[in-house]
Amino acid sequence: MRLILVGPPASGKGTQAQRLREILSVPQISTGDMLREAVKLGTKLGLSASECMAAGKLVGDEIVIGLIEERIQRSDCDGGFMLDGFPRTVVQAEALDELLGRMRTNVDHVVFLEVPRAILVERAIYRRTDKKTGQIYHLRYNPPPADAEVEHRADDEEETVNRRLDQYEAMTAAVAPYYEARGLLRRIDGVGTPDEVTERLLAGMRKS
Ligand code: AMP
Image (cartoon, rainbow, N blue to C red; front, side, top):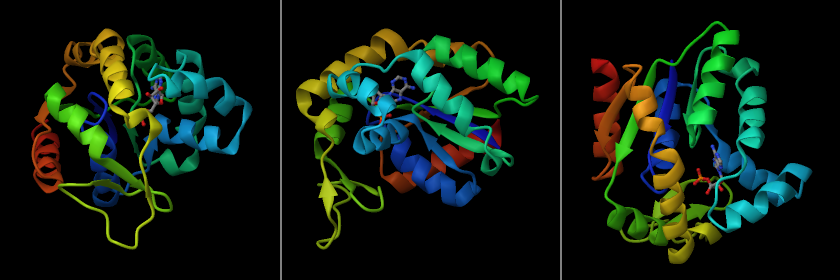
């Protein structure tokens, strides 16, 4: 099972990927998480990515393509994987096709989470992440337990979220038609409880 989750920032890709990883028993590969880890560790990669991330801009294609190339060739991906937050440009999608072609494999499903912009902004502003486990919460609809130590992503501040959404519309929106033209895309309504959206995702994958 090789699955790609696409959709705008805060559409629920991370939340759904955490759930599907358990259900489908495949590793979740999030370029956002990998980059945040590199920033936290202060690696060379982290230093070069941090400015773009803080500004709500996309990191250079060659950086994220390099990360994915190394990651999906590890043995835990032999039985499949789930990409969350990659590809984010048509150049990245083409590079992934080329890489999978070299590995003599391909993508099975691409699911696109559709959520209106006003809801995306609200979700980002109320999003909190458990510092230790990475578990994602929403302060109103899925609040963290009282003893959890949570943080708010700096790029989830309203102004930066709006910039990320603009970047999404300018650069990433074209990824959906790229996969649609290849007959791989399934559009899923991403508005609802996490359980409802997981059900829709699984039903969508059973159909295709
Ligand atoms: P995310 O956690 O997926 O929302 O990603 C957080 C930030 O990491 C984004 O706003 C970008 O700055 C950067 N990033 C993550 N994935 C990519 C990607 N595939 N291409 C370019 N930048 C990315």
